[in-house]
Length: 249
Image (tube, one colour):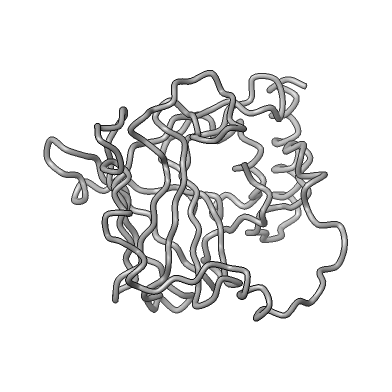
């Protein structure tokens, strides 16, 4: 299957959605252009579990466990990582615009060459010995998070022939318990791969997709040091940020 065929499927689904008059802001779990979604999404009704039992097997974090230096992915090793240095910040709010304070925010990403530091990633791009690609922080009293990192590169994946993922950063947000975990992705403005990517296009509503794209912010940009991007996360309400359902790459 080549890109032209996948793009044709994406376009047909988008046209059907637009003509339906419906408003669909969630990620489609079964999205045929994203081939493995057919196998990876749940097909049976969920089972009720005891959340306290799950928490007994999960790590436990206190505020003292999250070091402020963990939010800077460029200083975790002896040398400087390769790539375009940048700051990413934003505010986590509920549907009424109230800040979500002291929320644990984690990120993970590929390096500037589009390679994850993971044994299953066999993309023939160079690993960067000075970049691990993982960080975390707590939102402050106004709901803001802040990271310093390197802009990730796009990378190939095996959904179809010549398939490439747009550059993105994975975000994970925890509530007051480890059973309250939300996962999503942040993209960068103007990426030419948006229209070709089945994962991004699995959100059929354009306004909802746009909420996954960060905004360049010149006030966040530091003179002769780094570019600045702002990306806010809304957890509830009609303008909430689209979330993954544990099936995106």
